[in-house]
Amino acid sequence: MRTLTRLFQRFLIICLGVVSVWLIVFIVFDTADRRLPWVLAVGLTYGLAAYVILPNVVRMGLKVLHRRLIPRYSITGDGLPGDPVNLVLIGTRQQLCDAFAAAGWSTADRLGVASSWRMVRAFLLNFSYPTAPFSTLYLFGRRQDIGFQQPINDSPRKRHHIRFWALGLSHSSDDITAASFWLNTDRPPNDQRVLWVGAGTRDTGLSLTRLTLQVTHATDSDTNAERDYIVTQLKTKRVIGDVVLHQSGSRLQTGKVNHYITDGEIAFASLIEN
Image 1 (tube, rainbow, N blue to C red):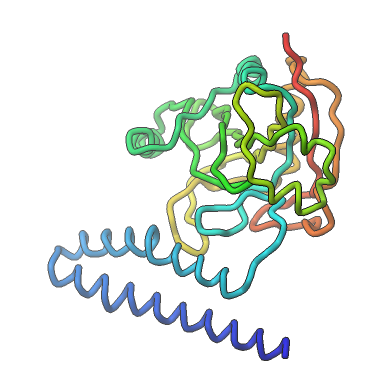
Image 2 (cartoon, helix red, strand yellow; image 1 turned 45 degrees about the horizontal axis):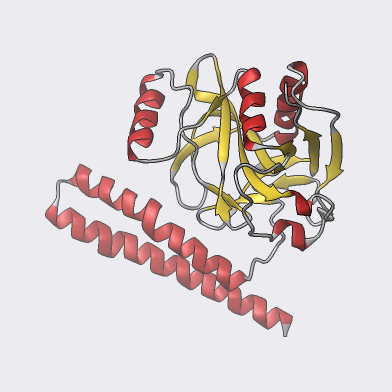
């Protein structure tokens, strides 16, 4: 019975792939090619395929496959594994902002039309943009609450960056290997002392997402090194206390998560008010 289920799932996935190709090539491109110059037709087809059709096909495919893994990594808007969680800081939002400011990091602008356009221009022309926005990732049922970054050589193409999601301190004693910790969706008030659950990575250039071909930053695969770099920066400025490492759980196996390499360890530390 399990074999038949898998075969049926794969058949449905193949059907989704065939339908998406047919829709992109024979409907979108064919219609655009008859009404627009070839260059504009290709651009319009790419935009609809990468940002509308393929993301929805991926979402449907994941529903078919019943992906119900505990998300010890963030999730992209397409429902795929994103950046692994590798740091948790305990404190208020103001303490978090002050700590990263002391370490020389900037708060990322909120993603929008204006900030996205400025980011595109800065990326293409290599202009400095120290508060460039992040793409949206999801954890605890919502997008990141705040993010910080540190440009590398003052370039928008390369940067250290980390996204944070707030989680109430009532969950601080929960087992982080349990689904109850990761599937919680309660968002605490901004003025409370909370857990700031973070996913830090290092951008290295320009890339395309693997399934939807959307333009994005390329990232270094070693998230362990980025976690250690961020912790070292904060410890040097004496804005965090002792650091304790916890395994995020057996279901996040040591090795590759998406295109990342992670040991599955999350660094926990309390923020210090200076």
